[in-house]
Length: 94
Image 1 (cartoon, rainbow, N blue to C red):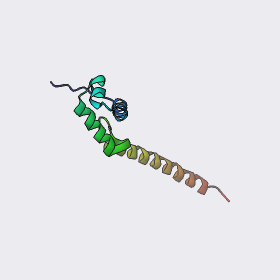
Image 2: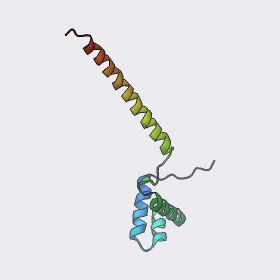
Image 3: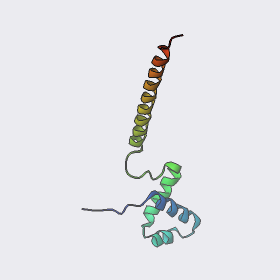
Image 4: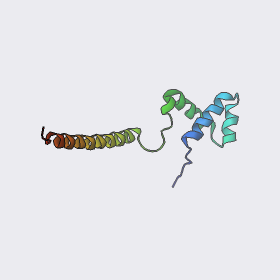
């Protein structure tokens, strides 16, 4: 089984910063223990995606959907609380 080394978002961002500051990008790659073509690919992804570069494992859309479902559940619970409060306040004699 081929197990590829995985690098964190922070590592990739730091590598891209170091490459941007250096005239010898292949030397930066060598010092970091990565292939220079990998560093170029990270630079391209960083240029194209900016802050959204290097999302890591998982699909960002899945994470977004999970957050939306959680928010939806919270809002439904708040709505139920408000409905009960209106019911209680509506029963008060005037």
